[in-house]
Image 1: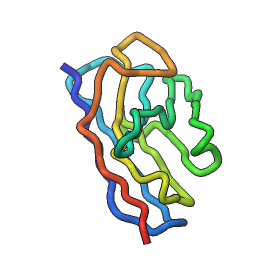
Image 2 (image 1 turned 60 degrees about the vertical axis):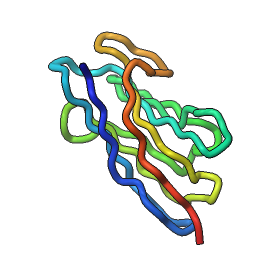
Image 3 (image 1 turned 90 degrees about the horizontal axis):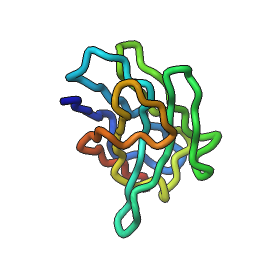
Image 4 (image 1 turned 90 degrees about the vertical axis):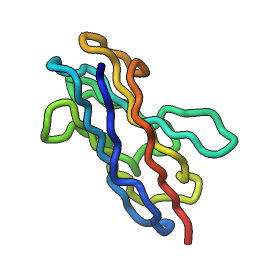
Length: 121
């Protein structure tokens, strides 16, 4: 069973930066699509950014130009560089992946436990 583990959340002031990382384990195959979602209190979970094995990326309009998703140095790892953070970016951020062999802009076969990001002065 594939397991995803996120790291890098925390408290940051508006305008600051954070970098999230996600590592997948439990598979010998390369994952073709991984993504970050977030869920703020009282809101539905929303897609933040997706990356495919070819390096193609997709972002929510609300984070374009501020967030960057990338493949990490290790196999089946991704990062999310978040710059110019706003209070409305406060949420639990979840890493997700599609099952091996599948490519989709909305990977949701495997999920991490989530990491809290709080943007506050």
